[in-house]
Amino acid sequence: MTIGGTDSLPLAVLRMRQVNWAQGSTKRPSLLLYVRQSREDTSAVSYSWADGGATRVGINLRWMQASCTIEDAA
Image 1: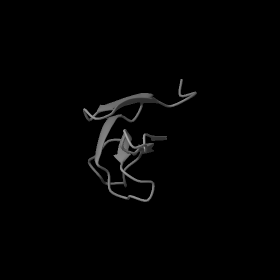
Image 2 (image 1 turned 120 degrees about the horizontal axis):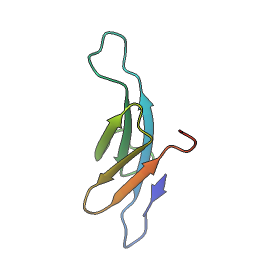
Image 3 (image 1 turned 30 degrees about the vertical axis):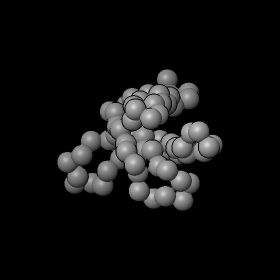
Image 4 (image 1 turned 180 degrees about the horizontal axis):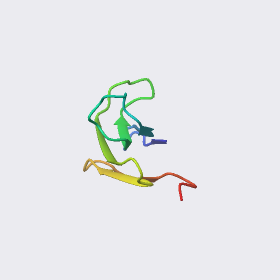
């Protein structure tokens, strides 16, 4: 999802994904929400996460905030 990108509002590209870490990792499955400043940018300005079974995750960076839900997750 892309928001902003106007003269008065900076571009923010939101990407959300479920992550199952590699076998042997001590990390638990997670739902991640990344904020990037361009469509081509591979590094996130910021990110947030929730339990892997979650259906919603939010973020507040002061200059933008978002609450994203996985459709048909229930």
